[in-house]
Length: 173
Image (cartoon, rainbow, N blue to C red; front, side):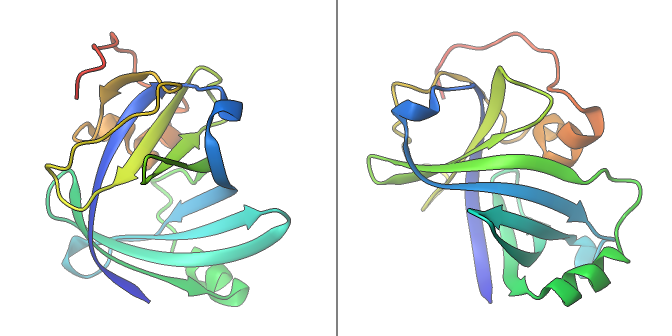
């Protein structure tokens, strides 16, 4: 069981040329939100598929700030997953996405792609501190930082079935 603080930044990016990335993993994810837990925590289960293997996780998060969360996450069995699905929050649409994990200059990025867009994606990076400087790959064009924009949460994107309409900002972060 992993428990601790998660410090993460999230960016809207143009869909990059995957061949130019140092890809380490590619996962197909179905993420289902459950009813809120203690202290109004966000609860979810995931079905993850990687190279034909399927595994499941349970996660509980308490949001401290837009970029910092208290997180508890652990693997569960297929039977536990099915049982937890009975507590799914029907007001939230399950999230279906492909996650491409890659390294760049000792940073581990996660690029989430969604079936509703071939042009845009969301890229995340876990940090050691909120002030950590991020070195972006030249092959990825960052449109803007969406860490604090709830319209780019997985639940919001899945419910809308599209990215919010907005004007791209400069690459500054």
